[in-house]
Length: 336
Ligand code: SF4
Ligand code: MG
Image (cartoon, rainbow, N blue to C red; front, top):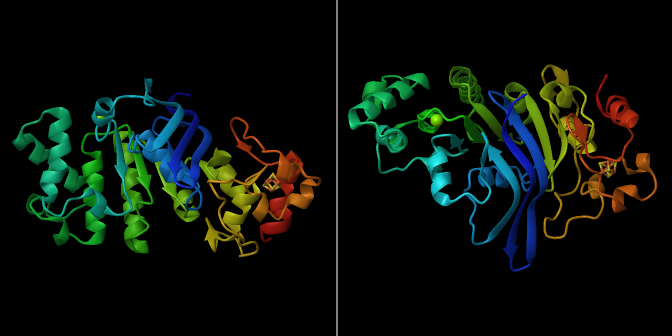
């Protein structure tokens, strides 16, 4: 197995007036070539910060980053902005939730697809225009030869999303980071965009990090899943393992608050009460303990005093015994 992206003990901290915010607090994961890693968690879990850091889009003045990010053998932490700029758009690309953050209203769609292509490949204007039309065709924009000269406001929301995907993929990036890319779209368009991403991944062989709070989307897209809570990974495994036999009480909470998942009906038996943890003053022990309904199963004070670590491979950071992790979800949460 060949880890294309390898993240080791990543820590991302912001200094604020109130103190140090530990947005990412010791995160390690691998992403293999051609695979899709789904990162799930509530807002403030560190999933978006992690990926902005991988892309080098954090503010170096207010942010401290330690740990290792290695992309295809190249160390990115501490890399110079020039190096990162070369990688962004070419080797790694980002698809945002709102295409209007990526697309300028003042330039034609075509020009905005041509620009990164010319910058990274040195192609001529004519070649770049042909490439832009080709990309618009690939993402399913009708009449691409005339649409290439349209401005973003002349496109519908779904078409803008497609155009942004065309822009992100124009240099054939090896790593695509998609942050809630379909959240703003209606269900039908969402399904079309997800299908499109899967097709393009097949064609380009890219690795994808897919960030979402929607487990239905994760079930559709991901090969592997990492669940994040309070700036750390609390569960990791293949998509089938995590969705069918989750082993962390936080994942149980996420799954039980979903109306339906791949045909299984999960009832709302355990909505997660309480709020995400403070990243300024995180709870002692297990960060999930103030919200966890399973502390009594562990007994004693372990949950409030000792931080559970996440092991390697298929793992969950929780003090429950291996047997409890396998049985409690089935016995107490999953409807028969
Ligand atoms: Fe719940 Fe304790 Fe497991 Fe944390 S370690 S998830 S508090 S049972
Ligand atoms: Mg490339």
